Image 1 (tube, rainbow, N blue to C red):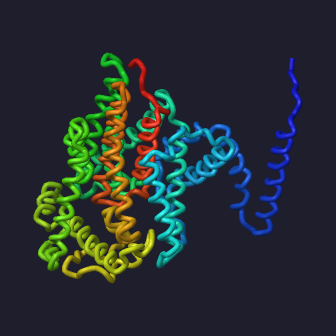
Image 2 (image 1 turned 90 degrees about the horizontal axis):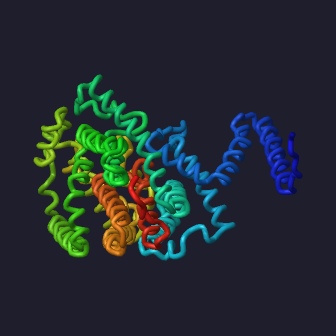
Image 3 (image 1 turned 180 degrees about the horizontal axis):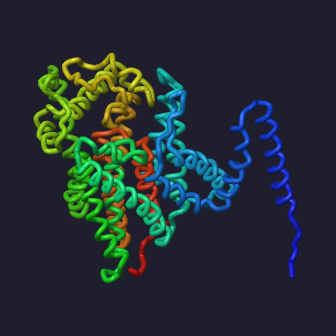
Length: 483
């Protein structure tokens, strides 16, 4: 027997609203002679489904992070598909959810010191965008920051509330990322015999280059170490994760990316630094040494002593020679970084308060370069930037922008150590330590790259801050028996 029910006024309103939107999009497409507008009804359905199932769409976005590809439009603009449209959609959904239910985020989430400093960082980007030399580029960066912050920080704070949520979050990223690693290793080994010079051919189209690929692996690596502790040693899942730990180490090495290797090796002393409560001392010592080193380089132009020999600074086809030339100052990729670092410092000297504006380094840096550091790849056909996120902040957002991002770094590690010792259970301590190791890997990668706007790196930065805030507010706990 078919059971009927009365249709509510709200359901009638949604139906007629959707019908009207469909009719309007068809008429607009006909009038404008474009088929693009015909997609409006489908977009509305996706948005409606996302509002009803925002958790499911959040995990879909997580699964797409390893699989996304960069798409370039004819006008020169680029986007990440399908992740960036999903970020924009989830940004709107998250704002809608919070507008109707202000208690969806845990109490104290926005007053957490890490979130406060992050919001200050976003505010300064807005100020610098308003005063930018080329506002169009700057507002695009600001918009991207917003749709990174809202879904990866705020929506993470809404969705991840239980141990089960964290497990699901891990597996939906781990499975596609591991599959792509296996495919990459097979291509690299079978087609190119693990050649150093051909590694970039093996990571496309899902990763821009081997640096992008290795960065994501090194950042996600601590989560696998953590996940292995969730399962009993006798289980298949535990053994699988142990095998994958070895797989990820091999993938990082065979990516031939020095930064990712340094990040993984550096996790060992960093772990003991947090364990022995040495974070404040280590951060203070680092700040003093960095200040003295930078001061010496700038005094009387001492940095000019490190200018490379143009003829000898080349790209090497063998990884061993690549490492050796790095220490000798004869590796072209390393010295090209120095070439741009010098330009960034000179830009800040000219525009110390707000820089040239977010997203504008490429458009202005050439007039600030020093020819002594020029290499044969300085024509910069890739239109890449400074290859150091801190110097990128300095050149584009001035000294205040740099100091704010340095403050984020100090707060997340120092306050993160406090959260670690605040946790009572072993499970929660492991979780917080894992998040700090992930952030350490992100920061090391940012020192020699500027990928925070990449969907392979940036999301983890925002999500780690959100997860630490959740543990701090006791809105998230991993306390449970192992499986």
